Image (cartoon, rainbow, N blue to C red; front, side, top):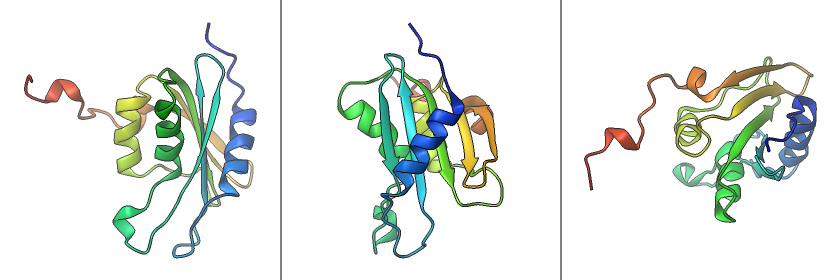
Length: 136
């Protein structure tokens, strides 16, 4: 059974996750949360590294935290940052969403109460996926 998706509850949980961000270089704090079909919430925050390619985005941390414990059925994802409008996920996060949370409802928000609802397909139309790989 799919849980009722409460956008404000998810955005508030993402704001809480944001408080744990480690962003000493960019000072751009991001929080995210995923909701699984069985009602579990998994939080994520961005974790930077002086070697920038080693940085982890909040969205990926949240999705991978769910997957790491076997929670595979992500039905919603919220991400929040202190931006003028609702935050937009980076291309890498969009690609991971297309793989791990393809059918999830996505809420993009900022710290000023603005948010929009979208989908992974709208964020990354024509996503590269496993069907694009040669057979094993």
